[in-house]
Image (tube, rainbow, N blue to C red; front, side, top):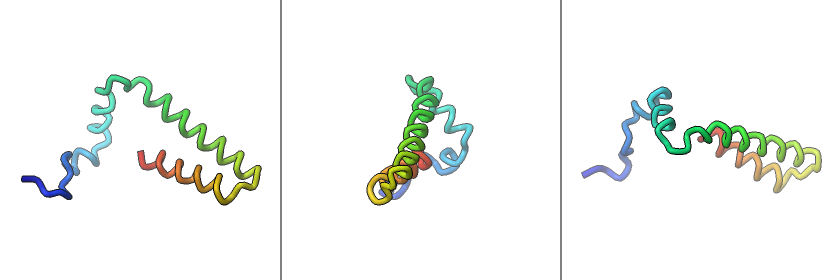
Length: 74
């Protein structure tokens, strides 16, 4: 029986970027991943710029900084 806190994938595999990339390439939509990531980052940066220009510091920038944190964690 596995502990609840034990990950299903060994930490050594998760830390190995080359090994992880092999999993990404096996996905049926692997060719779209780079383009989608670039589009997501482009949307984040454009909207952050728009929020700064509009001086929307409370809601707008907070939302897009959270989106940037999600992007970086992916």
